[in-house]
Length: 268
Ligand code: G3P
Ligand code: CA
Image (cartoon, rainbow, N blue to C red; front, side):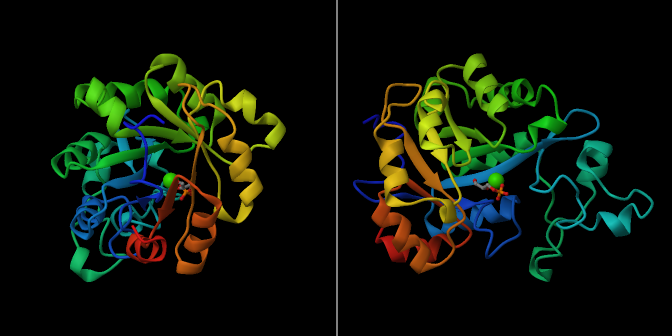
């Protein structure tokens, strides 16, 4: 086992706060990771995309419409794609009121702001490069921001950072550019294809509805890109019943909007 990136303590899976503690605070905001921290969770997951002027920001959808007040502030700009807005424009938006009035004024964080907050909280980051097909070269941009923020030093790389994507070419690009980094592929490759994935990734991160005990065992039989047992982090597990089920499969990490419910279920 590679203790440094071993996710959970002992035999328990790591509990990873999905978009922060996103059942209780607006997803992908600093408030959501601060709340995860106060609840006692060190791993947080986020989504990274790129603005018109090349800034990396933390948002899940490729449009700003669902999680900000962009429709009111920029009514003529439908469908409000991130790639069509500058970072300065996005910085004016309210990313909290849609979730609840107590979060009014929360902002869309830049990746730089976000990792600085993760650092302040001494948390660990499962960073998703979202929709890489929309943002050619976003892997290099992401690594540049992380390096400038001090997150590609040995300590962070070994203990606190995993980069994942649904885009297989994106995972390969990260692995090629920084072979020391831990990577994850989001999806459920066929068992026969797993050895190919294991050449460039350390984690297979499937939706929980797609997996069985046999599938997890098949992943665990292999060694990942760094020679450690290939790991499984599964998403998005928001009920005690679902958490108990995947815990019995022996997954390494559980990605959840409700980290408290999952912690209670798996006994972390
Ligand atoms: O981290 C896994 C999960 O976030 C992938 O799906 O759509 O929530 O980014 P999505
Ligand atoms: Ca995600």
